[in-house]
Image 1 (spheres, rainbow, N blue to C red):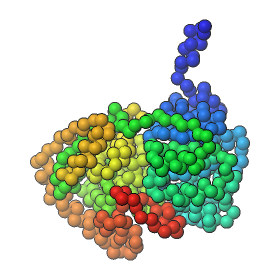
Image 2: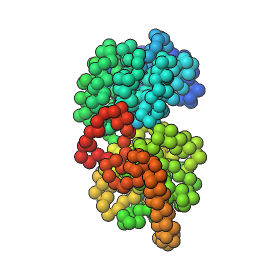
Image 3: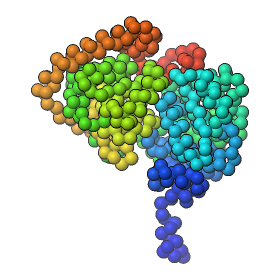
Image 4: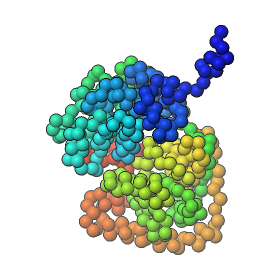
Length: 449
């Protein structure tokens, strides 16, 4: 029989060291204050370090970037060479975030990363590729463009391929581009596929890209964390703006993300908030990449307290210390609601979400409550204060619309005209990498935003 000491050791929670990571990585983890592995890291790392293909089913914020970055960096330490791994991500912001995590975890190894995304200079990216990075993090459209146009660049020596947020990659119609990339990369490689959900599209991609994979799953159902307090406001559609300003006013000391359905409303509300004295910045797919990164940086640093965003900010982005999430518009899909409110109450912290519900949204909110298995509470309001705000808010709304018209008329080009026009096809948010890569636009599936 084992001694009591041996018995207690065998049931102890695994550490990064006991999972088999090398000292340079353990030092980096210690510097980053990663104390112990998350569930997905505990499940995935032993198989990944054995060289197996991995299917990881885990929600955003679960620590999955480190779950695929650590085994790749460990293998790179053992076999130092040129281009080693390629990570495909659905959005530009997520691509930059993944690259930063690779560089932080691989700091002791001098790992070099290149980020290939739309909205940034193609020649600068080609120069970065010429410097022989170890890791490429890319959106699919821009990666395909470099494979076609950048002389001397190929993925022939690739050892690792990672498909991160695979369900979102396929939601954004990147499937045909990914299929083309899979045809030209080495068959002898290790592949990691991470997804929050296993849709039929993701299962098809899994069959096409992975070889005898191990499946690790740490969250089989969508749910919100227990530290999140969820509220709703039931209001007429015509009073959404004034109630939003009322909330921003009463919660002014907090960091707030406001989610909208359209680019038009993200732009309009950010201008309106600014006119009324709130430090707000917009984040959506029709801003330039430098503007998007700048908005994120200002919000993360606390320089701006309010971020008004489309669903481009709902997944993958690690924005610490968000106090409140406000859903100005309710998303059509419950999983998008869960991703949005998951921007707050992260890593054990508490947080609040408030959803504006109009007479047209009752069915959507009931569906969300059914999925999360919780009833939202009514957020208390002061009717007199809201009535006093109405005139100022209406005036700020008119000024915001005029400012957007002036921006569009002032030579803003196609992008600014799209921002100004409310509700048309181009007013919905998505990454434009496939357009920038010269690909024909594709019809959206019904109900997509």
